Length: 270
Image (cartoon, rainbow, N blue to C red):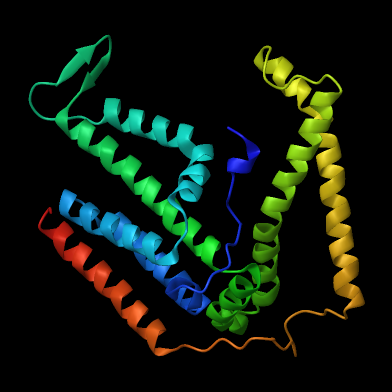
């Protein structure tokens, strides 16, 4: 897996319907989709959710290759999760396959497929949120959505700003890591061969300059914010004001309707 395969935090500018939705709508829609994913119990619910996700990908015009490339870093986690559900889900009746201390039942096959599909769709819908929403829009949307928490003295603006900055610097740090790895390999460093301990030791020449670079970037960002008289959310103005349009209300209605439909299908085991 190459570092360039990690696409979390990247933003692909566009003018599609999904790009033009209010960021609050996209965050709430993503949350509704995740709720629907956990409500789904049968093949009918998963089929609807998969069709909705495919439609969203087509509308956003985000290349399928970009999404599949972004899935590579978590592929091993998905495989392990699927295997655990496959081998450790008990079933009724005779097992489909038995070897050593493992038995595979029909229920285990369904549980493994459902879990792998659920994780893949959950991560894909999260990717769509970051791919179609700029970090500034995410910051403003999170702050507006968490605004009621100010009544209990929660630093809403600071929290949303930290999440946005962290998301924004993921691609930057990945690019920096790739450059440092290339430089170290040119000096004879080997990150691929040897035992686990040797691989861990080989990472030291990579991690030290990476941490130094990260701290330097953080310091430069802090100085830049202070030079621009940044002092938090109080009295802060925005270049673009968030305003819900008709398409946003329609999208929110469809998101709620999706949760209701999946919930009804799950109640009947579909």
